[in-house]
Length: 259
Picture 1 (tube, rainbow, N blue to C red):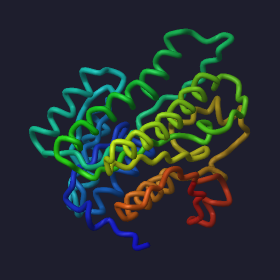
Picture 2 (tube, helix red, strand yellow):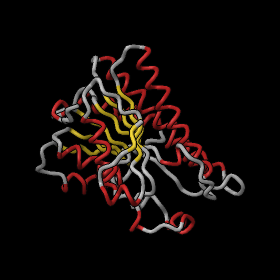
Picture 3 (cartoon, rainbow, N blue to C red):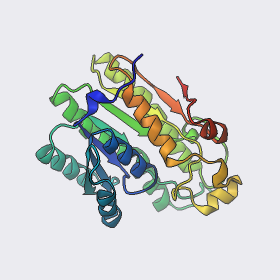
Picture 4 (tube, helix red, strand yellow):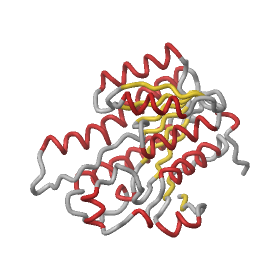
């Protein structure tokens, strides 16, 4: 199998939650590979800083301010992309929230926010991307940045709803992959499930609970490498899941469990 990003050069990729952390690392990697990357996030200041940082590279970064938890924002974002850049070839659903909110003493507002971003927002962006891919007969690729907690229940206090939301992402990935196969659509779905990654996403409260420091965590760049690996596979190859694990895989850099 020959791995190559050549067929994506100049194509449009949408990355949600692109302003920092894993999303920023993915955006940078795809721009390096020559893609037109639309970075969607709420923080205009961070997006504008990323525009300056990525200027002069092989591709180009376009900042787009939108809240992934709001359907109208997503619709307007994809309309802007269609009107200004053309068809979407790649969607990376990276936006996510994981603030601790226990089922026993949390509040409904926090739970709804987790589900609206991690599940409903992901579904809405996927719907709009697939609609464009179908319209233009594109062999596209949709990647969900999932979590190890989307496959295993570790029982970490306060992360019950977050864990449930990521299990939903796992099920959605599998269901959409089968749906595309049954409908003879060559649109790939890949779920990438990192372990703990050293970004602002993991609050200090959670780090303390799981007793983990940055020395044994993945880096955002490791997850970006996994995205590029999945995209580099030939059109007929389906990478269903990738698990960049914790310390051992971070040190060795390369091994990925692919199912």
